[in-house]
Length: 237
Image 1 (cartoon, rainbow, N blue to C red):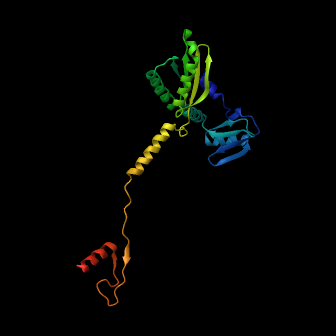
Image 2: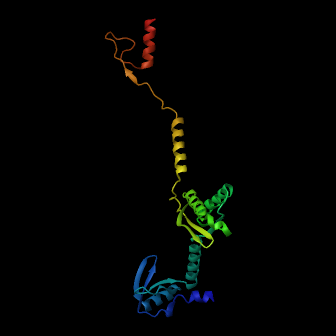
Image 3: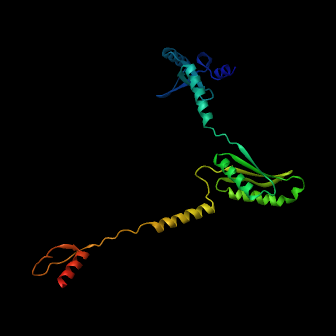
């Protein structure tokens, strides 16, 4: 049934009842009478397939209809594969969640957001624990703050019955805002690299020494300052 529905989605050959059509192909597009387009399809041994009926004139292709349906099915599969399925992951807290449990759930939330999923965190108030709703709100706000590098808040904590909800959405790749802790760490690493960088090598520039008036060993010679110093010390001895 699905195949029949797909095949009936397009008009083919004599099913196309218009005065003229636009034929598109690798070489461009051409408007021609429908009779000429059908004759061209017969000569090439293909079908005249209407791909855009609402255009003026309707747009058609000269192609084998079975091949055309295969191409359409393949394109839809590729598009479906590229679609990212966003799931909503739940994280549950109690109003008096201990630190170990908090860190454990925080790590899971980071993984969920990094994978592109949304997070719905909530505090469940059982019985008289509803009296600690302010404590639950503080917990959820801390949770959102600790996840600022991975996600953004879609809605602030709100109480619905016995549950207080917080919704977080993943940040787009490459647009994550670094936390203050991460920025401080990078700054410290930069200072450390700067301190450990080897000092630049310095070279003693060559100097030109004019030859004595009566000529001699140093006439028209170019020697370094260190060599000149050694030569002077030897002459003094």
